Image (tube, rainbow, N blue to C red; front, side):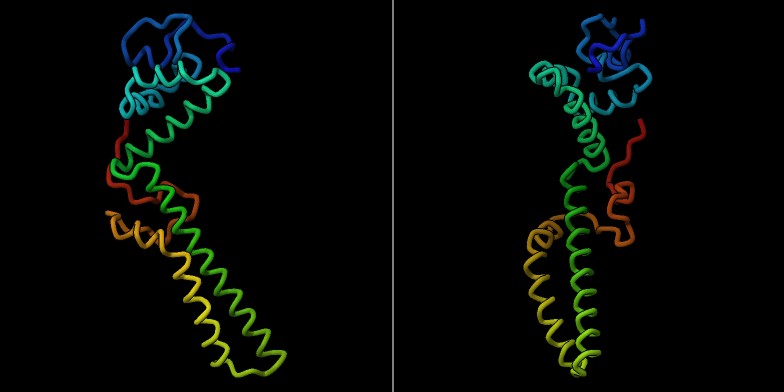
Length: 177
């Protein structure tokens, strides 16, 4: 566990930022090392040192590292997008998933059309009409949540952004600590 690792004599990033002496029992020291000052600065800016301390005290010691990682992620997301925070990133990924499901359905429909044309000689226009009818129902079923989110969203999703590349999210607010 990180809390039992030997510490150097220097203050942790939290104590340095708060300009206080770092005690051997400092709750922040195992999770905010002195060589990562920006990590605590972001968490402190969003949640406040007192609230983070209270959270860490309430969480069992074996879950604290995961808790800190979650707080850091949420703070970074909130600093990038003060309105939606993590929800904005989740919504972007859900929209991308729906787009990919749609693309997969189109590819399967085209594959089925080509296979049917090859084996039975059915006219392509009739099969196209049947395929598009089914896809329209699919889009209505999948798009409900995202359509309601997009109506209240203050930004457009970057269509060229890679699914897992969160740096491409058009954030409203940029802060370089």
